[in-house]
Image 1: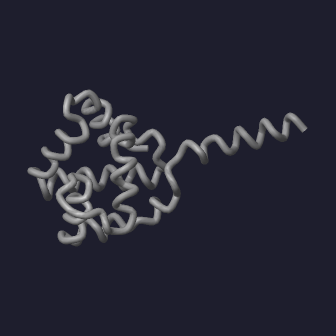
Image 2 (image 1 turned 30 degrees about the vertical axis):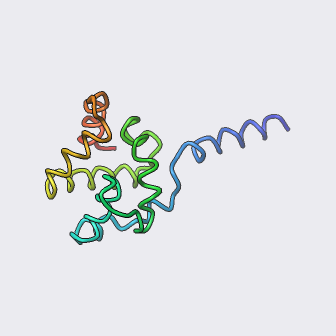
Length: 122
């Protein structure tokens, strides 16, 4: 019986340590491709607008942890989404990207690790 309990806990730990799989289903390409929609999400994260888009309030809550841990709790799909979104933000909205960096990493303490995460491939 103990062996079954230990096995169950071992299998459950990765599930608890990851972000909700509903984030895997977010259509990041649609968001990035629609400037108004993309701006809505960015404005939420930067507290320049409401967080009334799907999952935007939840994204805003987990974002500091995603940055500080270089997406360590992200699923492979979520890591891909984060990389794609950050790249789009830097390319399409460089001014917002600067504000984003100063808001979520004001001292630059996560920049090296997060940059390494962004250029990595899983």
